[in-house]
Image 1 (spheres, rainbow, N blue to C red):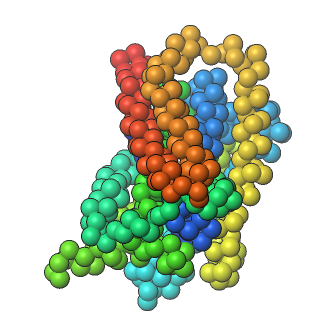
Image 2: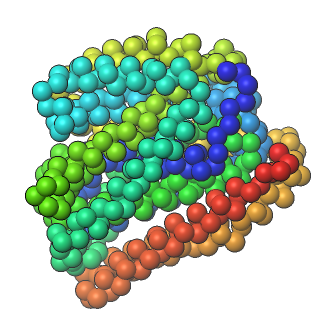
Image 3: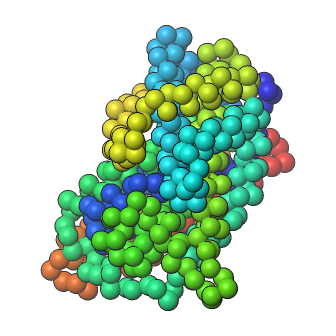
Length: 440
């Protein structure tokens, strides 16, 4: 396993989409609806800006240290002792995310489709699956995700068509009429969940071209933001903000509303299956990232030998950490943003500052400097559309409570800008995918 592992930019982007989407679809939509009510579909734009900052830092690191993951880069930048301490902090963060996710998926399945199965049995089964994939290469998990992602994305984009008869547009009106407080509170709450993209720093070595890393992560983050906004809009327009804020799993309740005929019912089982596959793969990627962090202290990339022991240890800690669903709910809903602010942000700033030192900038190859201009027009267009979406939101907050039509214009402008950003980021990734195809 010491040889170079390689995944495609498309696979890398889909991994980032799955990690952000599945993490943000647990208890957080309920809290966002409770805080922002019918304006909760604007709750993902500031976390997207934070994620774009993470992708920028990763891009800068990849330019200086190509084919290195974030744990190896930490030792190279900060030395054995300080780098080791930072790596321990990152490993603890990754394992806390794994504990959170395995507890959440166990409770979710116990509450929905496996009601008679004890939650501990579900957790053990999930743990065994994660350990199995932890003994394999990241390439295997990336290929499996590529297959299940097709089902996942098809289900997500088809939901508006399947639920079109139940949509009540008046549930989102008046748009942006509650001021700025709810907007900032709900966006801050989601900051930590989007910060799970930080975990992909463990896989920076799987792509050899820095521009491909940057473009793939950007597209994956914007794709996840678009999907989350779509699902939140459906929740508000179909269930209403009051029901959505009281439901433990709004996405499952939303899927239960799908009925075509008397002979084609219980489609929520298919929807939950697609979501569960994606959630399991998200846990697998987080688990492998933790194993890579552990193996960085042994200076080898063969993380597979730690899979069984680390898996059982983390599961036992998980069982002892959450005595009931209330503890889990409080931890899931409010801890992620605190962890992101206290651990992620300082580490990212340190990485960015130290990577800008002159002795490291000299290491950047001429080829990488030339590739920086590749897809620049699409990159700036994407940034412009995201900035425009923010302008529309603040325009709506400013005038939406006074003039209803201004809020409506702001909402439509936001959706159009976000959709345009999704398209231009996809075009950027496709263009960057051609780099070094014939001359690696």
